[in-house]
Image 1 (cartoon, rainbow, N blue to C red):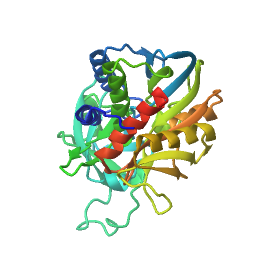
Image 2 (cartoon, rainbow, N blue to C red; image 1 turned 60 degrees about the horizontal axis):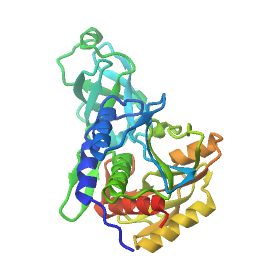
Image 3 (cartoon, helix red, strand yellow; image 1 turned 180 degrees about the vertical axis):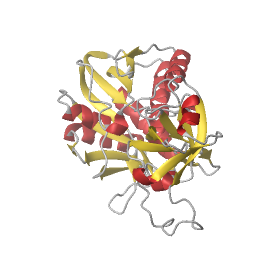
Length: 346
């Protein structure tokens, strides 16, 4: 069975989402962007106090409510301390690989929305100066953001309106190549957000109702492990759309959809996982079933938090997760197709 998704819409919305900063907890830019997409799709969002947006579509069968979650937040940094020389000590929010971020262009976003650029570097920044320039561990204590502004002191930085706790986002470097390869930061999880939007678009344009009443959730705290920990009480089944990863103990490739059977916190619901596999087979997409031991999702966070749900997870498979990630467009398109098959229960 073939499902046709709007591939151009997926790619354009994903690119715009990726280029819109949303490090954990920072919703001020992506919230209005999502609102614009919702308006264009003819749907209206509700919000919880965590700024999670929900789009609820009535099902053919209203006796059951399922949730499809795709997190909007990305990994990032925050300003931890302003040093006397005007450099910024930072702290991770989420699982950054600081080796990947060294010398990357960074955006420092203040409480009132001003943005300043800079770059992340090691305190032993030059092989011509420091004996340990190549060997000093790239850990938080050894890294600094240097602003592009002409600052010489902490007072100069404070005058810019920068303060402790301001969020920092890295340049994503989105690239979409002719052969279908995508290379960018934040494919995790903006590609899944685009797949969710494309699913809603498919349903609306084809005048279709999901099998069961379906909530599409867009949380902001997944990268800290608790984005999906709150679930509206009517939800009995939660499927997280999130990345799959590539490694020597995994079968997935950048063209596959990864269906997660277990992660670091435990196994996903066996009946739901089997249904996802059967639907992937039925619609004829490339997939793999995986166990991920350094990874978890919003649906598992919801399950661990004590919600009375069955949890499942699947999504596009990426290389170099939490760095400059790679995948093929077909993996994202097929994630959208499997989402459609799931919500229609075909």
